[in-house]
Length: 299
Ligand SMILES: Nc1nc2c(c(=O)[nH]1)N[C@@H](CN(C=O)c1ccc(C(=O)N[C@@H](CCC(=O)O)C(=O)O)cc1)CN2
Image (cartoon, rainbow, N blue to C red; front, top):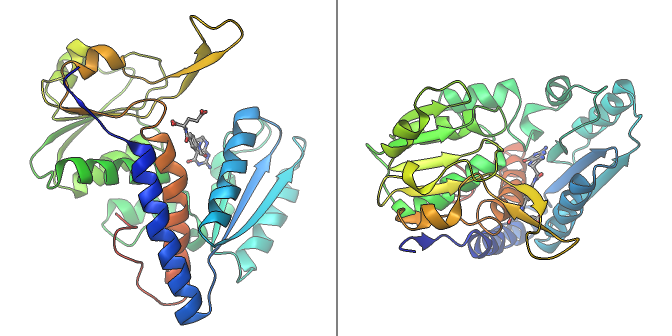
């Protein structure tokens, strides 16, 4: 292996320390405590774990955490009633509905109900529009986390060829916008892209977010490239009976032999998601009180 392994867990811990310091200052200087409300509808086991982690992380940096666990048969009307209440609550600066939601609910309509100033997932049309036009958006947490890791690793990204595999609203599209803002030449690849291997081999920055375990092989990677793996697929452990393990979208061993730097799974991008959610809540709180968002927490 020749690549530097990017330690997202350590980076996220440092970011949470910075956030805790900002939260303490907001309390001391402005008598304001940032508050985050997380809504979970249903009983998806992975979502249950993520929501618990979000609660613990929120409390650990000194913010207020409001957690709402609703039954799987919650109607859209009941969900919207809760969102309306949170939109109007001055103690709540960030609102997030954990995805996926049960089939009878619609993610797009749910996000649209959240006040864009409190949309700490950065998924609303308003925040997507602000991001693509260079305005003061709240940016989707995982791409924001990837940008922070890339900045730390590369510094100035001007003129780099960046390929993002995946075109979701939650990740691929905002990631591409952030890389464009950082002066990269950006290509979004997806399931219909032709000759994707050759395209990836031209990338100085390769970001994989397709949800297909180990799709990106070492011979797709340009020597020295920075590889960011956003995939998380849980599979049966090959050696430990009854246990599972996580795989990324990148075949780690072969890619690490070629890349200059690479994020592992787990411990790469994943921990940045929750740290950036806290960062977005501080940003939303500052903006709600007419204060500048702290440097280092935004795109
Ligand atoms: N409303 C949202 N829903 C979902 C989002 C989101 O950003 N907003 N993202 C994912 C889930 N997610 C946070 O919500 C999340 C995923 C992964 C991790 C993480 O730390 N992963 C670890 C491994 C954890 C494990 O062992 O399972 C890692 O990669 O190291 C944190 C948060 C979908 N829903």
